[in-house]
Image (cartoon, rainbow, N blue to C red; front, side):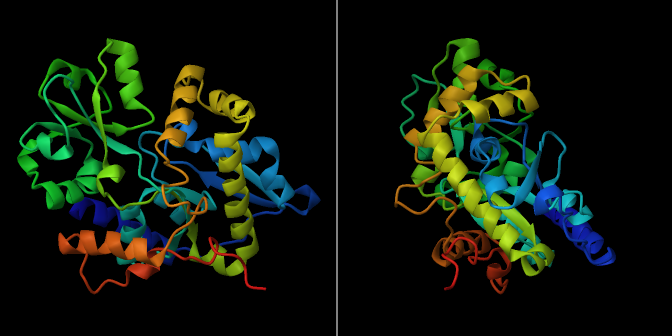
Amino acid sequence: MKALRSIVVALAALLCACSPAKPPPTEGGGRTAIRFATDWRAQAEHGGFYQALASGEYARRGLDVQIVQGGPGVNVPQLLAAGAVDLGMGSNSFIALNLAQEGVPVKAVAAFMQKDPQVLIAHPGQDLNSIADLKGRPILLSDASVTAFWVWLKAKYGFTDDQVRKYTFNSAPFLADRRAVQQGYVTSEPYTIEKASGLKPVVFLLADEGYPGYATMVLAPDSLVARNPAAVRAFVEASAKGWTDYLAGDGRAADARIRKDNPEMTQDVLDQARDKLRTYGIVAGADGAPIGAMTDARWKTFFDMASSQGVYPKTLDYRRAYTLQFVNPPAK
């Protein structure tokens, strides 16, 4: 975690060194301009935001939103710290807690995936029936994953660091080793592996095994929350409507924008990902929570898990990582 925390410390210094943030510019017609950075190239996992843009939900709420596409090497907290964007996507709950630990004035204001879509993928035909059966096997993980959900896997299943192998977002090493296990998203890698190789992998969704983290959070600087809470609320509400429409309605306009931003994306990948988002309850969750919702209890569960493993001091005020003011009805 040391290298990751060093990055966050540098971001905190950058934020503190900068002059007070200027308000987002206002475009013609009085709309507030919002630059929103995603965590990866355009994909169905961002579909609700693209739907809200395509259907005019943001514009109807007085916003002029520009989606800034992420990708390899894009650091969303750094973009927020530098003032290059106004809002950003937080991939997992560790990101928000890391910012809180280092005193960076940025917090989660909504969580648009109630289940983290992270999965472990294994080869079929080996009598693997649960995550526990993967103990002792080589597991391909990215550097970011080693400091995130791997902490939970070690705590719950007794996995050990000598199982970790470097994952470079290439499935060839996984396909070459029948004992290997690979990280992925339930909406992505299982389908692309089967499409490319004909192998139908065994898939374990961490959230369905008790992993408590949120995903696809909207991160906002404290300065914007204080200065223009109406714009933040408008973004959250429009995005929630966008996700509802993308999953339950006609997503073609959003998909067209996604393919325009990311020409490598294909419609079949979008279609199956959208179906998985619905089937697994990734956005809405299993408890009927409103889209975008967060709770104190869920954050406490996640923090207690991480702090018990020494990731954070137990004295950390984890509530600095988020605010519930935009996912609850406004006061009358």
